[in-house]
Amino acid sequence: MFAFLRGELITASLEEAVVDVSGIGYRLHISAGTSRRLPAPGEQLFLFTHYHVREDAHQLFGFLDQEELQLFRLLLSITGVGPKLALAVLSGLRVGEIQEAIVSNRPEILYGISGVGKKTAARIILELRDKILKIQPSASGNTGGLGRPLQLTEDAVAALMTLGFPKALAQKAVSGVLAAKPGISVEELVKSSLAAIRNNP
Image: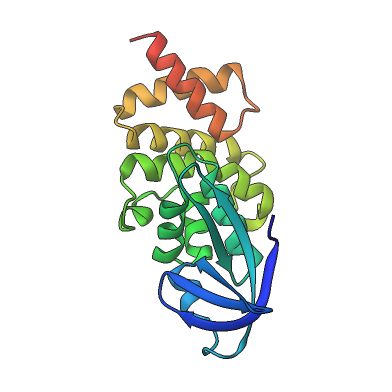
């Protein structure tokens, strides 16, 4: 509904900004990173926006750049991650740091963010790694060639261990799935491995 807003910044805090657009005041939820980069009140401002509708609320979110907006929307695509948690993730780390944690499969980097536990961090990495690599294929040096199966195995085993499965069981399940589906993505590899574990307790 709203792609962007351009107007005068009226007030701002770490979580909200009020922008006057032709006499109408828009209240936008923002990340701490965006808040630190805002101009002084009274100056002109341009924000990309995301309009989020729930049964009990209509919320408008503002972002200084499209990269942050894109990552916010990717986070919202994850089951169990709502706009409040997605904004907390963006407030806890810079966009590049979040992307690096995801593509390098380092959930411990996300643990320190308020509201992000081990399972949520694992889910974020599982569901977003391939999507981020498609956006920025240079983000990882292990996406092709002979190193890919090894990297896939390591990533999938690490994700399963984060979810609470023993390493030996995770390795066995992952190896079995990779043998049958060598061209599989890491997300599908983990999902298929989970199914294999549950079907063969």
